[in-house]
Image 1 (tube, rainbow, N blue to C red):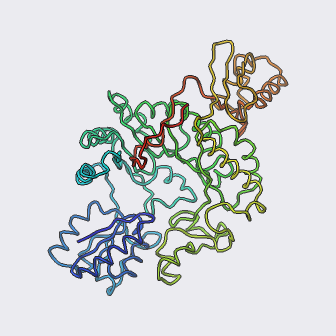
Image 2 (cartoon, rainbow, N blue to C red; image 1 turned 180 degrees about the horizontal axis):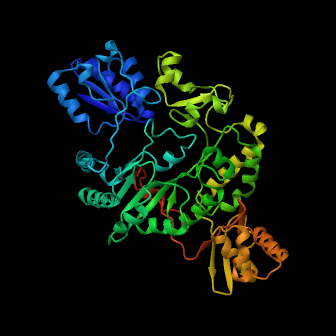
Image 3 (cartoon, helix red, strand yellow; image 1 turned 30 degrees about the vertical axis):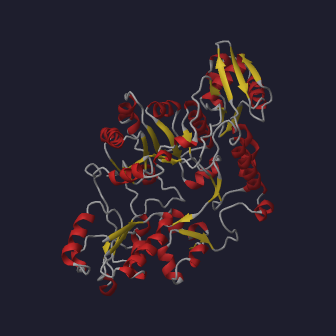
Length: 523
C-alpha cells in the first residue's frame, strides 16, 4: 500500500505519483486523503482517477488502522457495507457512492475527541536529516496539532474562508496536555522550534497552557495562528511563553472591509496588534486582502493616506481575494452577485468536464469579473485609484523592511514629559517632547481609547473642548497618533522594546541556502 495526504497544491503530484506507481506495480493498493479529499472533492478524485483505490473524506485518525488491516487481509475489493464512514473504495465505482446529511451530501469522517490522538513520530525524518550532507543547513521545526475547526468560525464564519470544509466545530486538546506535549516533543527530537498547525489558538491556552511554557528555564520557539483582537497583556504573555511568531487574522486595515468579511475585529484592533507585536519582538505573518463584493474604492484611498505612518511596524503583502470551496461566498454566491466557476488554471491541469471540475477544485473565480490573476495590474490603476494607492503604499512599506536597518517610533515617559524618537521616513521631527494635555492624549491613544473618554484623563479634566481638539490635531500633525473608528490610536512603542527576530527564526523550521551567513537587519 502507498498513501498520499494532499493539501492545497499537493493534489496533482500525488495523483501523478500514485498513477506511475500503479502502472509499475499493478498489485499495489493506493490511498489518498487530506484536505483536498474533503467530501465532494474526495468523491470526485475517486470517481475520475481510477488508479486511486481508496479515498478518505475527512479525518482518518480512527479509521486508517482498521482500513489498512482490512485491505491487507481481504484485498483491494472490500464491500461498501464494510468500509468505514467517509471512505470510498473500488466497489463504489460500480455500486454508487454513499450519501450523508451534510450540505454537499457527501460523507466525511470526523474525530470528536482529540485528547487521545497520538503524538506524531518524526524519528525517520530526523534520522535522514542527520545522515544528510546538508544536516548543518537544516534547522528543523516540529509541526504539532492541538485543535481542529475554528471557535470564531462557529460563531461567525469568515466570508472568504473554506479551510475547515464541512466541519467548523471546534475541538481542542486540554491546555495542560498541549503544553506537556510541546515539552515532550522538544525533548524527544532536540528541537525547540514548534509550529502549531491549528487554524486558531484555543482561547484558554493564554491562561492555562502558556504559564507552563513561561516557567521553562529554556524557552521554546512557537508559532500559532491567533485572532487579531489580542490585547497588550495577552501579546506580552505570548512572548513570555516563547510564542515568537504568529499569524493573526488581520486581513485588512479598514473596519468596513473587515465587516464585509465578518472578521469581528476593527482597523484599530489590527494596528494595535501590530504595535504590541513589535513591542514584544513577536514576528507577524499577515496579508491585506482586497477584492470583496461591496467594497468601495474610497475606503482604500482613505487607508492609503495613513499607511506611511506604520513603516516601523511589520508589513504584509496585498493579496486579491480568492473564492474558496466551503466558504460562505461559495455556498451563497448568488446572494453576493457572484457567478463562480473553477479557477481558470485548473482547466490546463485536469482532463475533466466543467461539471466534474466544479466538484474537484478548491479555488473559484467570478465569471463576471474581468480581473485576471491575483496581482494588481495597470488596468486596475485606472479603474480603482484608491486601491492603486494602497498597492503602492504596501510596496513602499515592504521596501522599508528590506533595508539594513528598520525605522522606529518609540517613546519614554519621565512623568512630566514624553520623549519620542522618530526615524520613519515620514517623520516631522527626529525628536518630540510632549507635555501637558498633549502628553495625556498620547497616553490615552497608546491604549486606543475612544475620543469620548479623553475627558476622563487627569490632564484633560476641566479643559475646554477646543483645547482638546487642538491638542489632538497637533498629535495627528506630528504623525504620532492616527484617528481610526472614532478612536485615537497611538503609534509609538515604549522604550525599551524587544528586538525582532530574523526570518531564519521561523518556528516551523529553516533551510539555510547561503554559503556565508548574513547578519539580520539591526534595530
